[in-house]
Every structure is written in C-alpha cells, then in structure tokens.
Image 1: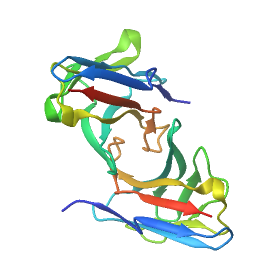
Image 2 (image 1 turned 135 degrees about the vertical axis):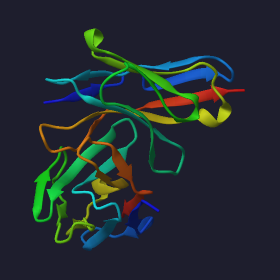
Image 3 (image 1 turned 30 degrees about the vertical axis):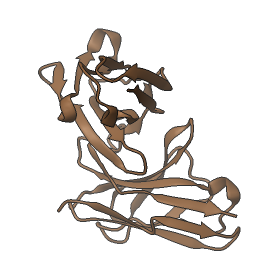
Image 4 (image 1 turned 90 degrees about the horizontal axis):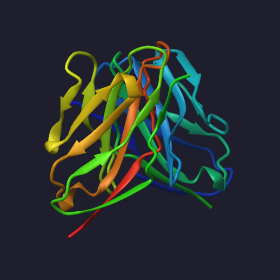
Length: 111
Length: 114
C-alpha cells in the first residue's frame, strides 16, 4: 500500500530537548516536504526536498532542520524546541505534478 | 511566486443543501490545481485534481470543481452535502517554479447542520 508514515503521532517534550520526527514514503517519490498546521494559518511549508541531498527552506524554516540521505526518508529535526513550535506537523511526498500524499500527522507539544 | 486564496474561513450549510467553496490562485502559467480534504484528526486526502483538458473535474465523494482561467479560480462544488462532509478543505497549486511542491491555501472549515 502506498503510504507516507510519520512517527511519532503524538509527542510532548520540554523546551530545549532535541527531537526528531521521522517520515518515510514507499512510493519512490523524489519530492518531499514538511508542513506545520496551526489554527487560522492553514498549512505552512517548513522545508522541502527535491531529491537526495537536496533540501531547501520553505516559508517557516526557523528552528527546524531536515536531512535527505535516502530517497524514502525525510526526518524533521528540532534541535532546541520552543513552545511556539507546538503544532500539528505533516510530512508529504509528491509526484512531479505536485499531487501530494500526506502522512497522518504528528501533534507536538513543547512545554 | 504562486499563491492560493481561500476567502472563506468557515462555511455553514444544512445537510442536503448545495455547497461551493471558493479558491483563487496566482500563478504565472497554467497551474496544476488540487483540492484536499482533512477530516478531524486525519491527514489530508486528495479529492480531485486538474492538470489540463476538460475544465470541469470530477472527484471522489461526489465533489466536482471547475477551472476558470479568466477568473483564476478553481471552486469546489457538491450538489447535496452529507453530515460526513464536515471537514477542513484545502485548495492547492503546484508546482512551484520547478520544485514540484504544491502551495496550499489556508483552508475552509465546513460545518454541516442536520
């Protein structure tokens, strides 16, 4: 089954404690991206990747890092999380036409 | 830069009534256009997409959308809404200057009254 898998689904952490949210896709897509979703703000792109070892900033990259060492994986790293990064995060992969396939989301709370 | 505007933050309809959700885009060329639905606690699911050809596109769950180049719009419609259609709806434009990553609107929350 074609899917994008994110882990964990829910995470509560403390300010400053490094965390990683994993994302994996099994569709051999070259394009992957991370979004955060906040009430009233819709989906905002954090980072995206066009291929292995190729990443670029989206609209709200501050406080986040990503890596793309393999085609299927695109982890999101928060090296020093802060409360304003409390949000719902989605990973997506897409074809060249831009049709995106989304993970189930990760609800992150930073206290 | 491409952008997507969904002018309605919330839409309330009665079950059985017709529905139209608005989407306007800004893009330098003919875009690819998408509508996604997000049910509570779920990820986003593709409803329908427009690449080229017939400007009226049929999707899943009885939804359709019409691409109007002159108005830069891609409005989503459904003739009779069901209570299970209550969800968040996102319009998207892709690709972004060759990055092939879509740009999303802020979403419209659909509330369905019995």
